[in-house]
Length: 481
Image 1 (tube, helix red, strand yellow):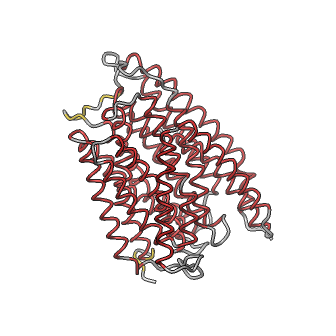
Image 2 (cartoon, rainbow, N blue to C red):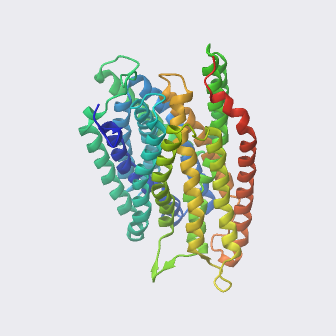
Image 3 (cartoon, helix red, strand yellow):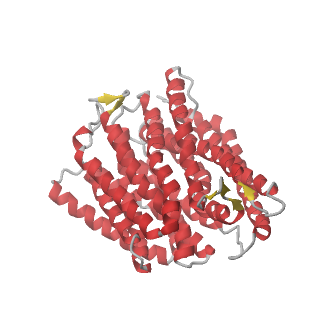
């Protein structure tokens, strides 16, 4: 198997595809709240709720997408998902409200196939206990964040001219991702003992219609759920409970004690990850609105678009990601690696600090304009970016270690379900800051500060609980006879 810089060639192809896919993904997520409020004239409260519903769909639908791709082929799943994503960006580039809702629904459906299939394929390029496994997921995470960084940075400037032009550029990026992936199929080679072959040995002409039909069904479901936000939230809360019970029952049925304990540990870590993801999803919603109205965005005579501040998250992931990738590989090589629970608890504590910095920033806001200095936002994102690197790529890597062999796609889907639940919770958290539509900074600063303090302290408590539980969870991850 060919390799570059120790990683297989397939890893780099998937990473490059991810960069261009995430450019389109990041363009939509960074602009959507502002697009809904400024172009769609939705109230901030309604925009938060719609965005939260989308986040839930983005991360819960991969449960079905991951399962289907596992059965009928990860590579075909990515191809169909990218085509659906292209339809999403083209629809959003049309100046019609109905086209926008259809585009958002296609976005959720396309991601349902692309995300779990890509993560599973990366894992299948490495043996289960390979030293490079954690390093690969962290490196992939920082590489595809290049797409998020450039999209968040430039989409805001393009959108100042036209939101539709920004979405058209995202469509072009999706086409590039499709070309790269389709033309480099032959470079994707599984590790020894692994296979990309579909679990159901149907021919291509039989598998493709199933994917297309499923994509159409997911689009229709997404349109319905986006129009019924309350029902959407109830369904996803219920689904998460069902998935949790199903995973627990599956774990208890495992014959091998080590496998049983690993699946229970996977469930516990998934539950605690909700604390991180709920705050993560506030970045393009609550935090973007805060930056738009309460932060001094004039730097060097130029006014920086509010959505471009979201690029700080990807920037610090990229800058710090190389260090974390090296660190995990170094610690694993010398048998000093931090346990998964320790990394998860560190992530929650780091995220809590980031949001508490937002509150401190408001306390030190300019006494004349009441605007917050941009340097505080940069500092907060140092901790937010670090928190993401401590949980997201590590969480993806743990799936291949803690889930039974051959169930990687389903494992990614389950991980996404808990992330989707976080999307629902983020909607409620965002609406803690119930600010007036035309409120001035001196009126809204106390509201934002109160919200950031509650969110930050709540996450800090969850992180401390995780620290206390770490010694009890760690033994579950150790191979036992």
